[in-house]
Image 1 (cartoon, rainbow, N blue to C red):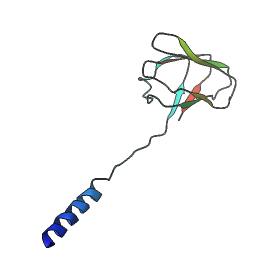
Image 2 (image 1 turned 45 degrees about the vertical axis):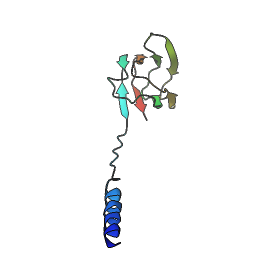
Image 3 (image 1 turned 90 degrees about the horizontal axis):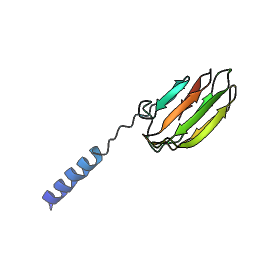
Length: 107
């Protein structure tokens, strides 16, 4: 009986020590100017919704295309616009930014 108690106590102790997961959350704050960007190159996560905002004085256009170059969504971003949801994104998607300003992508 004492042997079983010691074995069960050891297994219980091991099960508590194996559940120590460390989660590191990094905040996404990417500044983009005019150009074409791959989701994978921007290091954005797949199947995640992000926010996009024009943080400059110019008017910008954001176009998201899939792997077959079909337009999935587009946003006309006025000067200092509010945040718009984009996504969920796939790794094969591309984001096209047109205009003189700066666009910020956040999570």
